[in-house]
Image: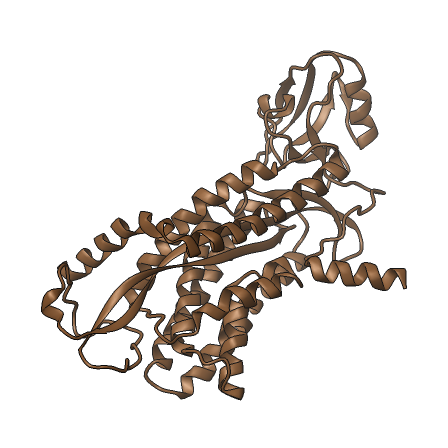
Length: 416
């Protein structure tokens, strides 16, 4: 147990030194630029639809930097404790392939798809030369870290939308999108002619590493060293029948299960060749199943954000606006204002015409008790709420995940 604790301590102490490497710095800035561009797209959409952003790109990007460092540390600890070595693994192919796939869809900015492609390419064509077990283990540990990041921040960039539900009616939903640049520490295996000249070595148990390392040519004693790399993680989801928080919890659990199964296949692939095919195929296919099953389950359930016949539901609230300061949150129900019933969007607009503070009778999310909300405001300023769709409202956004290349091709095709 003591050697593993020493190994863990070594990873934590080495992590801040990742950015000493200029190559790592350049790759990190490239990935960070893509992350910032995605959040800028989210903000642009919200400004076009609502006139102001629900999620500000700068704030989301800064948060992603901090969260990415935390997730990278978690992934680094997992990778080193499992003993994943990148020696002759072909890990250098993953980021370029992921960036190309990103051009087709932002959600492909994920090593599960890039790792699956390069692994299958090697198994079928013999090129590019990669270590399938090491890549599968890398993807598994990254997604365990992603599961952690989703659980603590997956709902923090939720864009409210009006979309067409499964029965053709317009319903309220949230597009959940998060992207993280992930700096990592991984293991690299070398041979040292005279091991007695090295200091600070940690002797680990015989069962370590779990993912068997490849043979390294040369004379000497094999030694693991730590080296930095850069990865990217992206999360895209939709919450329609559950709150964003409930949705990310469900997705986080499923993703963690996926990563645990994939890690098991990776360990098996490092020992038995036949499992290389299982690990290579399960990486992208299992990830896609997690996404599609979650989306189908969400679409088949009863939608949550639809205004009932009696009352108007709040789909979302602008941060620090009058309604937010009054304690109104998404899912709140407005029933009455100044003794007049609120049955539709027009009733709400009429209640807001008179300047000054507004008093609503309504219900908090999940509560049956009627309470009073007092919204203080200056004059007739907007109170800062987005109303859930009701009868007759039309969907104004189609949830899409097209990347830059696909959008460009579609524009060119439409012009032709």
